[in-house]
Image 1 (cartoon, rainbow, N blue to C red):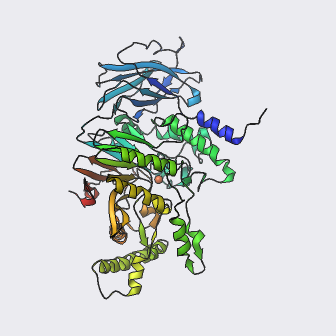
Image 2: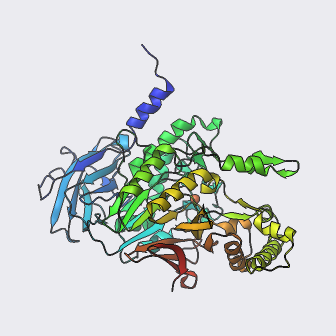
Image 3: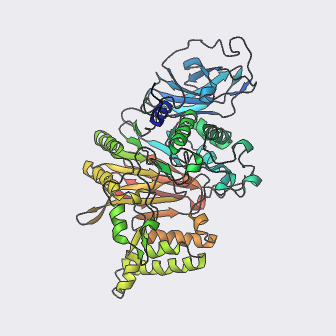
Length: 584
Ligand SMILES: [Fe+2]
C-alpha cells in the first residue's frame, strides 16, 4: 500500500476544508421546522453568542451564516432552522428550512439561499432548541440600470489593540449595498504581540485558552469566536452583506505562497498551518467558495448592474513570490541600486500570479459596467519616497521632523522650477525608493501589466486597499510616451484598530499634520494621507462620479469616543478622467 505523502495530506485537507454550505432554493413556506425546539426529541441547551452574518450576494442568492454554541456539553449535532423574509416582522417569508450543525465544522452554519429577487433587502434569523438568533439584514445584487452603489470599506481589526468603534460607526450608515472587508479581520499574535499594552485595562486581553500565537486549527477557531463576540462587529455583520478577502494576518504576518515572516520551523509545517487558517476562515466568514474544488481561490467578481463590477483579489496566498528585503541589497558603500532595481522590476516576479492576472484581465475586458473596482489588500500606488527620508524614518523624532522640513522645502522649490537648486539638492528629492516592499511596489512589473491592461481597455479603474492602517489616496500611473499618465485611482482605508504610522514613527501628535502634508508632497502620486487615525472609507458610485468619504473616530483606546468630523475627508473622481479632486 502506498504511503500517504504530505502532498496527499494537504490535498485531502484542502478538499475537506471549510464549512459545509447548505444550498437552499426553496421558495414559499414549507413549514419544515418541526425540530425547532428539540433534537430528535432531546431538549438541547444552546445559544447564539456570535451573531449572524451574510455575504457574497448574487442577483438571486446570498450566503447566510450563524454559529450555534451547545451549552449542555453534548457534542452531537444540533438542529437549526432559518427564515428569510422580505419584511422585518417576518410576515412575508420567502425561504425557510432546517439542517444540522456539527462539531466537525465548529458548529458554524452557512446557507446558500437561492430563489431571491435582484436588488432587494431581506431579513433573516435562525432558531435552535427554542432559542432565536438576532435578526440580520442583507441585500441581493441589482440587475440592469443601477443609479447608485455604496460600500463601506474596512480592514485591520486587532482586538487587543482597541475597541471596534469603527465597526459600530459603519453599522450606522443609512444605506450600504455591502461591506468590503479587505483583510486582517483578525491577528495571529499573542495578547502582547501587537499594540496590546492596554488590552488588559480595556477588558480586551485574549482569553487564557487563546492568548498565544495562533498555529493550530483550534487557535484560529477560538480567535474568530472571540472577535465575533464583539457587539460592534456583530452589528456590522447584521447590517449588510460582507464581501471579504483575507490578507496576511488571517494566517501569519507577511504571508506569501510558501511561507510568512511570522512563521518559522519551530512552529511546524507552514502549509499545514495555512490549511488550518483557511479552514477556520471558511467556517467563520460568510464567503461562498469560488471554486468548490479549490478553496484557496477566493478571487471573484460581483456585478452591480451596469454601474459597478467589483473584482475581489488575493495578493497573499495564491500567487505571491516572497517579499524582497533591502538588507539583501546593502553593500559596504550603500544600496546596490542596480541589483535592487533588476529584482523589483523582474517580469517573473508575481503578486497575483499568472492565472489570477489572466482571470482579472478577462473579467475587466468582458465587463461593460461604468466602474471597474478592485477590492484588494495592499497599496497599489507608487509610494516612492526620497531615499534619504526612508533612512531618516529610523532617526529620533526631532531629527526626522527637521529632515522632513528640509526635503519639503526643496520639493516645493523643485516643483516651482527654482533655477537656483543645485544638482545635489535635486538628487536629494528625486532619488526615490519604495517604502513598503510587501505592497505592489515590490512587484512592479505585474503592476505595470495590470495598469496597462486597464488603460488599453479604456476602463474607469478604482482600486481599494487596506493593509497599512492609514488612509491614502493616489493616482495610479504608468510611464506613457509623454511622461507619467494616470490610468486610475487608489482609495485606501484606515484600520479599525491596528496602529498606523504615528505608532511606527513615534511622532509627537502636533507634528503629525505636518508629516502628512510633507509625505503627500514628497510622494508624487500621493494625493491624500491621514497617518494617525482609525476609521473606515465609504465609497459611493454613480454614473457620473465616484465619491470617497473617509471617516475617523477620536480614539479606540477608550470606550468613550466621538466621530472626528473635523478630520473627515472627501474626494471625487469623474468617470472618464482618472484624477482625484478634493470634495466638500
Ligand atoms: Fe493590518
